Image (tube, rainbow, N blue to C red):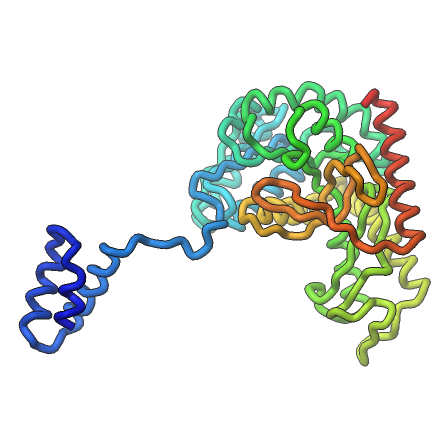
Length: 369
């Protein structure tokens, strides 16, 4: 033990170490206090190492523009996950943002340390990510694409303001129609395509997996299936590549359930595609699931997970698709969007995806983009 202590002589003027030397050289057995001194000496010499260097830094700030049902739920879920040290809520109705921030801050005792403040767009300064939920909301009976003209005008004014305040931030678009507005944000911002992404069909994919898990009576974590295309009526469920515990869905069977029928498939997709309309008709807005979906994207970015998520991004050369923002499985990490994964598609699925692309192109053309 004395030899071990002698090898630590590079420490200079550390009182606790000098005390440790005296005890070690005395030849007497070490008491618990001596052992504590020994480990303290090691800590002084050895710098601390981060166990997971990809975790967000303590200076992470997230700005959320739009403090309605969706924006405030994203703030709430971000608090619970401890993803940021500061959350800034902004809304065109300042009192609304102030009230939501105050209400959330009152619960800060029960979550990881975070500061929540209300502000305006210029207060996005220094944000790592700006989440945009601003714009008109979808009303009962209204399609997402019918919101396009109204919210495109909102974005024409908003995106330049965001860039002035936070030119280094990633932009995460949640407002609908999300694919159209993600494309508009790419064009208006001039940012590299990887730094602008939309929430896309991450929520639709979760709905798809959750309904399959309930029908098959298995945990949702064992279901792997994607919804691609527009976040809207033309979205495409990828039945051909769906799996349950590495077993192709069409081959999966279990003592606790019957195999899927064509009627089951139709009903499941109908409930995935129309889920938002069903919820909006009953309570006026969707917020909880989309809030969790957006925080999953934030988590993948801030923890540099390289997670595969069906976010909306600008595609180039993906199965012949060019210059449109649409959702396909893509890598998501600290730098934003990585590669889009060239999944194998059934012929009818790829055709449906391209029809979804043409639908979005038509909307963008009407908006002069």
